[in-house]
Image (cartoon, rainbow, N blue to C red):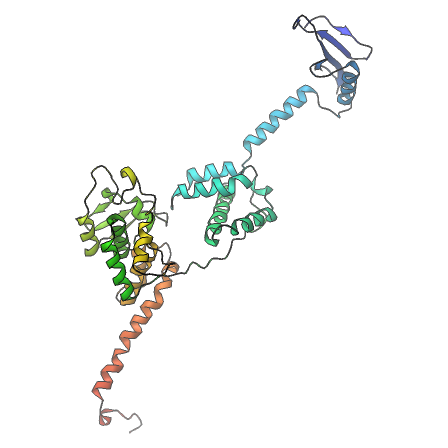
Length: 383
């Protein structure tokens, strides 16, 4: 440190800086005692920081009475705050932990997209205990104006799962309220009558996009989900043992489903692309992202309802046909549909009940034709 120059203010002095452009500048320091300890610290420069002896003296007085922290106290507090921020589990930090350690069911990319677009901008820097019900309700209402109720529910479910992960693993406290989700009627079960199904099969046959047509047939023959067909690789198709192995399914577990004769014939008829590992490859043999306009065109040419979902709807048709046959019980149907719980399969239960009732009613027709003689009726009141 250079030569010290006193000022008229007690405990305030300055030194001269090295020349800059031929000029020297005063650098002010203060000295004071706090809790019996002598403290000497820099206050600032005359021109650069607009510090005068009077200002330096005022800062010194504030630090003596504790209105301002000393430089060392300020640095210590900053380090403590930095450590606290580092140790703080914000929604952003919880998302990273959750996404790295969760059991991957449905595509992680889907959840990542929802998180980045809808959750991170609003709640990313906050800790769960900082969230208030009003803020979450505002997000729910805002999203409901532009997204389907089911999508809004997915977003808020993801927020709930992230927070619950943190609470379960003792990383943070949870929220003090229940996160409200929109009510969703997801019991929609598409079905086709014989005439509609015949028109659809004819539309698939005549459409130029054979690969999308084959995907629609595969959904009808096996009940595979759209995403499952997109990800399906030849290495997971065993035509010899008649099984398809499904990885990373919606239920969160790997599954396998049997290949029936129609599905086997369809798979054998494909011209396999040697350069792609996928059964239904997308552009350049990579994983498929969509069916483009082909699936909707096939649906429209078959004159099906506009709200009929070309692939997911055929999954429902597959399940409905099995249930209405009366030959497949609900447990088997659940396994074929790879439903996680029996509740998801119950939407088809009435079809099976109708088939059973229809079968039972055949006895009425049989006895009507037989016309049982009155003499053969046993009178239980006779002694």
